[in-house]
Every structure is written in structure tokens, then in C-alpha cells.
Length: 106
Image 1: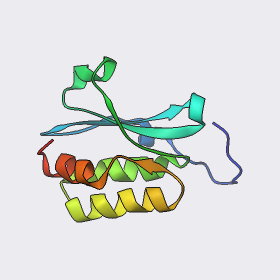
Image 2: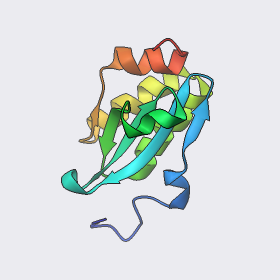
Image 3: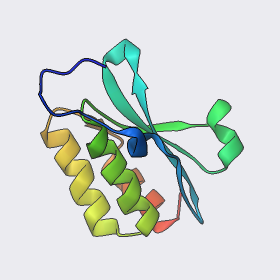
């Protein structure tokens, strides 16, 4: 992982898979784009072939925070974090999808 900062852009906890009643979230480094990605799957076993890339950002903490907010079901904070990722140069699925997943309706 490349970084131009004295502070790390992730830690071991960032990469721990998080789960809730409606799915699983996993932050991983994507070497091809030099950024972290937040992946979602409805079932733990779906990460092999049915995962969805929800967001990308150079800072893994940003992706991990989005995952934690979605797991908690806090829609407003999830949408705020998604907007933050976009505003800071990352990418994110459309906000309607973020809301649906956070609500457990995806």
C-alpha cells in the first residue's frame, strides 16, 4: 500500500469482515487501483462470486467506517459517510443502494 502520509491509511481491524442480519462487509486493498474497496455480500460464502463493490477510497478507515455504519443500520450516518467518501475523491454506489443496504432492503 502506498501512502504519502506519516499516518497509516488502515490497520488490521480495518480488514475484519463485519456482519449483520442482512449481509457481510469487507474492506480490502485493491492493488490495481491503489485504493481500498468496501465489498458487500448477502451471504458470507458469496464473496467468491456475488460480491458487490460499494465504495473505494485511498483511506481504508473511510471504507471501514461506512461498513460499521451500515452494519449498525444507521441510514443517515451511512449516507453521510458515503457522501464524505465521494467528496474526498473516492467512489461509491448510488446513494439509493447505500440506503437500501443500510435498511436491510437490498
